[in-house]
Image (cartoon, rainbow, N blue to C red; front, side, top):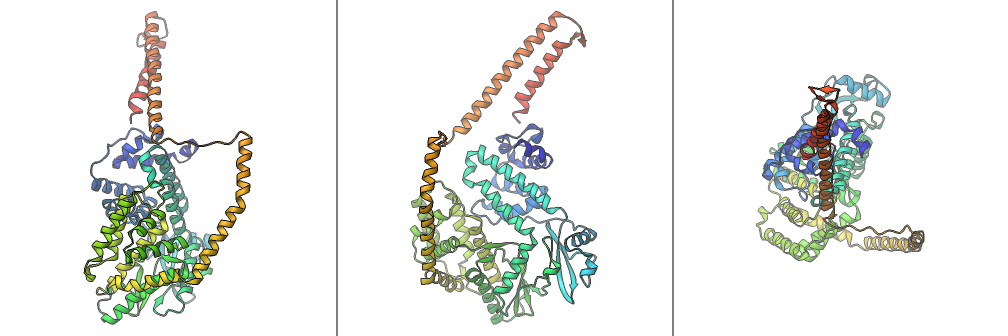
Length: 545
């Protein structure tokens, strides 16, 4: 860790200072960070969740693009954060100045091996849009109007350094602050790092776009941009420019057409889920375009999440539990999906889920909102310390965004009613003979592998025991804080003895009255007093802050 601190001390000090200024001094105090990282600055913790949430948003904005993106991703984690933090993080905006077009041209030249004017029929002098990771130029390529996404110079290195610091602090908090361990912060930061790394890998985004192109090749109502691989790389992405209106501007369309567009949006999402194994994790209204008044264009493929068998199983079980009012199944599903390994009071969780479902079940159809149900669900999860993996929460966020898209396209749509047959298809698909056989086969195959490896694992344990290297780890809850406090007391006692010895020796030396002198007193005595003063300052002032 010492080498890590030395390598990143400048940025680490900046991050820590911003956190202290915005009310996190009490947490920083409990971490074993060196003095030159914390320095003298200290502001005591703020009172009130709303004020702390606002301070946290301001801290993220001050720390720059990586932390802003961190906050934006956390704004979707209603299972982790209280509502005031969610609302503040939803306000995070990327206030970034566009980088120079000469730098963008240099990036294209470095990545593609040719000058932009040699690759494109026309390449503009000004970007159309700028964000924290890249900026977009509207150009012409092989006679086609295209959007060219050019990554900011050095953004990968900056993100990697910031992510290393975030992960380092998360590990310290997880180790030294016991009450934070239920959040599994190191695992959370690894998920965040993975999400951001995907966004800066334009090869991955190009793969996502091409997947959606294949998935919707037979759907004339859905428009996906085409990637031009020969004009793309890991830091430059050239794709068809989609031109149309934002879906918020559909008021002029007749009601039948609006309902058809809303159904298209729902089909788009569930087709991804059923047939592709991945889904667009950010389908909010701003990522859709209305093209030629009859087609939907989908934008922004940086955030795409995977559908694994576990996620599909959990979603199916949740829907089955809701429809059958089976609160035991609901509670079991949530507990199994949680990455918090601590025990949960299942009976109390069942009571909360029953209250949630029954309250919404008896609402008039026009007042029922999936987003409200999911919000209440995540609040119940937060009370019971149940935290989902990233792709599970991505699905919840996607469903909330999909509902917003559906109501934007058609305010009169009954979203729960429109979703029901699609969810029923999901459950029927999961319980089909083919899928049951596949799951049974995988289970037997995994069990066989475990049995096959069991003798070797037992033999390995016996070899360790024979060599005297077999060890059992024992963890005592709460002992770390006690030992840490005891260690601090011991250090202060030792330091106090040294300070007393210095003061006594300094006083004896001054009585001897021998040169050299400083301000009329023996130099050695003055040095002893100075050392005693500095050590006292360090132990009783600096170490407290």
